[in-house]
Image (cartoon, rainbow, N blue to C red; front, side, top):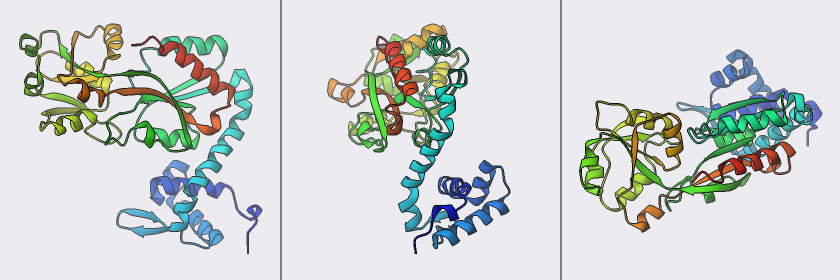
Length: 319
């Protein structure tokens, strides 16, 4: 017999979503600011209402049942709609407007002063929250925790970060495309040598951890031609890698998009850029489309439309 939604405590749906995300009663309870016992009781009520275990305990945590897996996307959609409904008074009232962004750094920071000024000129009482792009960023957009994302994707045919691999619920627009370049300190010994693949590989590299991976398309391209970088240092993002490459007393080199030249100038980092020593075909596989991403349900949201147009105007002449 079909149950009426009126017989379900809708607060339990938040618990259900957090359990699906965390795969742990303890972690879900922490995010809800309740005890694990309270979260367990909520799970028991959900199991009773749905007539299904929903999750099975395993040594690796909670494993969702087939029913729970089938409900994951509709549940995310439900929570997204709920967040939009609850946030509507703030979005419709300029003095309470909130802007929540997730962006790659330093991509956001080189234009953040201009962006924030434009937001405050239009909405003087608005608040802005920016978080760094990480492995959870796309899910945060889907959950309605973030208005818009701004980051680079990859073009390599084997990459999981291609635009074609984005979830169907995500809309996007490419603002500009850029290639990675090699960044070396102004007195780096490699600058005294012929710049070629041998020189590039001779020195230790700073790599970045991109969406929980220690390698990216650059390493795939090198593997294709039978080579591998000597990665001596891994850091969370380009901002940190450029900072370290500029420090004295080591021979580390960094690889980051060419747009970072603007960031280096703003922060007076003593770095010199060299192109990756690959032929045109290999470099093409490393092209990075820097992209705005938002949930389809926000495609006609006036706030998001204005934000998209503002970002497009700011970044159109970046490269």
